Image (tube, rainbow, N blue to C red; front, top):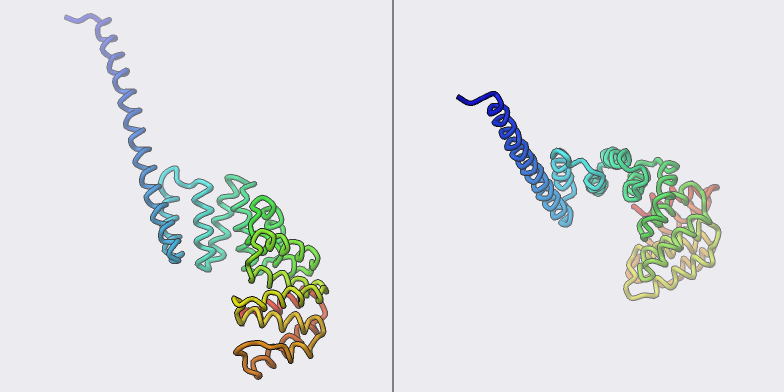
Length: 268
């Protein structure tokens, strides 16, 4: 008959066997969860790359629901997808969730500022974009900061930011156009006109670039040039309509309101 000592030995052996088995089981579970998260993230990234941002957002949400899958990166990716899908309030929530985990995360700050800008919360957007842009240092970051500052009437700061965007992507005609418009808003009409003449001299110039040329000419007080400058494939009536709209913008008393009006005009 086994003694008490033998029973104690047997129990210790069982414990030693159980702990490694439990550890192996937990590791297997963690590995399965990690694999599911990776699968969902890859699927979401692929869907987003094809432009279906709403579906991509739902995939990112599923990835965030996997135990241990609510990290900063997932919340930022989810915010990016919601922002691209036009769900600006949802994007704000996602970026805030990321910032709760890492208050200094530049991508989350940039996304939050971008969403706030689309929601018309310009002061909040400018504050967050001002912190994010130097860290990210991309044309998009400086352009959105420049747009926010233009809407706040901070003309010189806006020109500085758009200039940095152009430095990073010197061949981008749209960035050059944004800089020219910022220059016009800041009262630097001759610089704006010269830049837009360069942009529209390119064989790659499109109608939106010629529309901006008309705008900066009128903002600079050169209505005659706006009337006579050669613009391909633009009916006279269309040109006259653009000139009249630009004159209305020029007559607005404050640069911040001018910037808002230009934003509306450029979207028409």
